[in-house]
Length: 434
Image 1 (cartoon, rainbow, N blue to C red):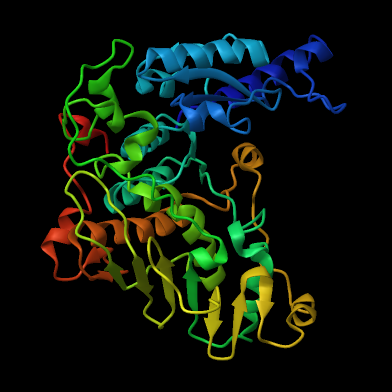
Image 2 (cartoon, rainbow, N blue to C red; image 1 turned 180 degrees about the vertical axis):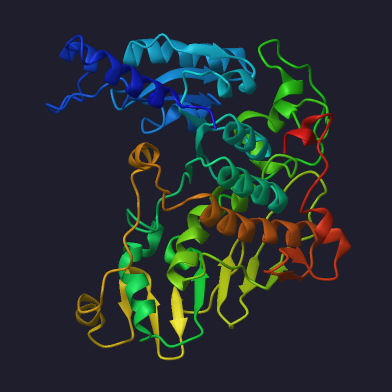
């Protein structure tokens, strides 16, 4: 494996320390009285300068712990706006790339932040891993199950640090439920609810599946604007005539690039459920869908998706037009139920939870994980498992039928059409990258 630039600087500083004193201004300041050597300062590049890559201050950031040094986008207007913003906000003269491969192979970059449409996530993550970069990837991890498996393999093979950008298993109130995940995890581990459990992700507990991310099934071809390299934007996706609704924010409504509201929000909702149920290393064995027949190109709505695990646990996703009867529990077991706001049918449940051991500690500081070469809590394996659950449902929706899944082979049982969706063909030579 090639030496990283941090390793190079560390050895260089050791060699020069005998002959000179390094000024504090050269070492840099974190603004807290601590000084950071160049060897400890991380650098990052962002691929995708739309609303996710640039619109969130936590993503579009630059400081002495991790400097933003490069940006990439196939839309020259997006790219130039991001470059200008980096100069105005951070006084950084960042490099601007049109081709993501040039950014990934820039030797001055430690971390690649992938903020593109999901049909690019697999190729870019594998290419970054091969290039010796650590990876911060937006959700969903990948658009297909096969791509997710390949990313997990590549990250492991090349010894990289990976994180998917979701966080509800370890911080913040879990959407509309009115509680963090920790007490739910403690309650489940205590066994007080009994087993098996049913988890219901519904509008009644504050969830919204963003059904405005649907496609249009009668797009009229339009002229490609001069600022957009549409062929590169499509990349591995099948060629379809350009229409503005296919690109930028509304790409989520088309199967070629994403999975609608389910693809956009699924890992946010399902990763904490996997964690709560203690199923980070397995998959459901069945997925059932209640939905209208889907268009082959444009994504539509769905009413209900039900996952079943081998031990009988279930996850029920309630979508458009699905009306639950009465008060709906979030988690339900043979011995008790938990409702929104952590209202529980078990008497004195909060007192009982305070007596329970804390869940196993998690590495939740991505930059520290990069420096210490320790896996982030939402690493490539955890991310692959939760993304596969999302993509299982997407396959079932596209085929409009129940699918049975083998957690060992990670294939659908006796269903050739479903298995063809595991590894979908890529246009041109892009398939050779993954």
